[in-house]
Length: 356
Ligand SMILES: [Fe+2]
Ligand SMILES: [Fe+2]
Image (cartoon, rainbow, N blue to C red):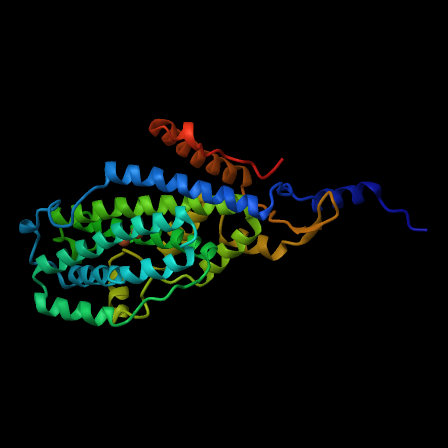
């Protein structure tokens, strides 16, 4: 007769026990709380946006002082940034169709689109005032760009929230690095004479917007991760695996632009892996890409206390308490805002835990 080592059995059972407790809420309840959170975050966001980032692409910059003798590299970069932001009608309309049922997400998306529309006009002004191209050339180029349309990389709201987390961070990094060059701080010899205070200010203003976008999508993504850990982690993995900057396949001469930003030290595979993927994952409580992939590979079905099988989003390198803390912080910001404007007395938003 084989006598099982009781200690070993206990330890196997303990290992199998989900470290994220079984969720308490039904899908319907979770979806309702997520929606409430998005409405609250959207209101909080608009308030901050109006108070702190209300700029105008024409009036907020001293265009008459913009340099007209920038290097071909700088001009290629400005044209590239201009081109990427030209697809704003597609960025807005495609995703809006997918999320239109959600008050919080769709209204935020329209607000976000209004900020992205200013980016398109801001980069348009940089190219125009640089005098590198004639206004007619620029109009024709814009027409050519817009003859193509951008399509959603994923057509479901969950993948898209995580796509936008990485995309906004990557965009912010691009603009911040150009700001560094325009401040005359690049160590590349061909940028030794690139100082331009107006361009520096353009990059600073636009980076602040991208940072606010990243922050919103990060908070939203974390809320999904909290209520739907398994599905969210799989979506994050998909997004990382297939990530590409928007419109890179439809912009003519994108390879020349890409080569230029790579050589300029603005953006390349190493920046993407470390300053975008790793950084965003850390902010979402995941230690790194390898941990995520390994963790998902090992996700398995285990029985809960009622004998129902569920997946376990447990792995070393997922800091779930950090995820919950982030979500609680988002709700605290919403609650503070609602107290300020009186919404707390009418229809307060409150955090509802999904776990014991
Ligand atoms: Fe933008
Ligand atoms: Fe953005």
